[in-house]
Image (cartoon, rainbow, N blue to C red; front, side, top):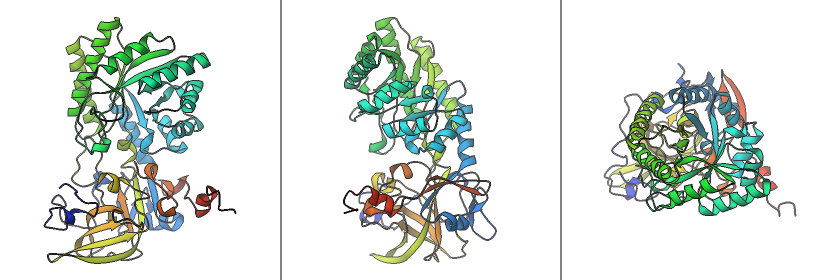
Length: 469
């Protein structure tokens, strides 16, 4: 079903208040394993627990709303990607969620780190990430962040424009250094995802076009520059992708570019980055491949295309972010109000308002992203009812979970848990309506650690220059 209105499917062509893919559960208390971290269970008393800690107890300790990360699950997923892609370099995509503790976990589990802003680079360096294991992204990197990256010796800078090439050459001359660079290319692949997160089609802001010849020109320029060390090519086709079909086309086009560059210069490039975008399960309908399945498919693709172009296989890297941290996290909310709204045609919709909203997860409003939810503070024998979980903000589109079967007796004070909230929730959070952002806590063996503390109203006012007048 295509969402045609921010208020939801009832304003499109629906004949039911629920989308066709949402099926009535046999047991409304059951937890679908692929949506949650490996330690999430429902106790005999009906309370959902993560890593041995009841969410009712956690809410008592840290309050709601809150983002909750399962540390062991995060580490296991990081190792799973590292091991499945042995011999390749795995960069954790920091934009999915980054703080100093996460950066340290990434390094401890043998991964490298991808950053795309001055803030992310500063966090990585503050966390002690070895600079040579950092990759820098960004379509409009400032002189300040490029200077910091060059001074600290980051492992690679992914170049995105001709202007950036000139900027780097000038800074390298000033600092008497050389930058290790990769050229980001757009392969013309249309990833099967939302328009805003499909990043390899031609009409968008990232990279150099292969089709238009810009990419080869940029590569030759970097190769001949005395201040730049051209490592290879970077490609990223989008996000929340479940199969390798798009990667096959992207690999063929980038490796063809490798061959063209070799023909033009006589030099074989050393590295190819296939990017990230590996999808996760947000609903029962989502069926992501495992790291092992993806690795087998991508290795076969690369081997086939390398043979076809008569190349030596370059060093390969990938950039999972969501696929590691997404399922390791959940968002915890407390119900404030429940109302039933008549929507015509004998139908009604049940709105469950919680103490968070689009300020702590903008993706449903921005991308019409689908999420799931479960009653977390108890079990229920009540009938499942299609419900919409909404937030506190002054927006009709303030929707956290568009459609979900929840017990008909959900009431104020209950806790709801939203799975797969580890990626792009806190990292895209805002202070809309002057709402302080929730904390990020991790749980390991029943113990809670604060990764990012809860914002306060004093934090918000500290930035308000007139607040002290």
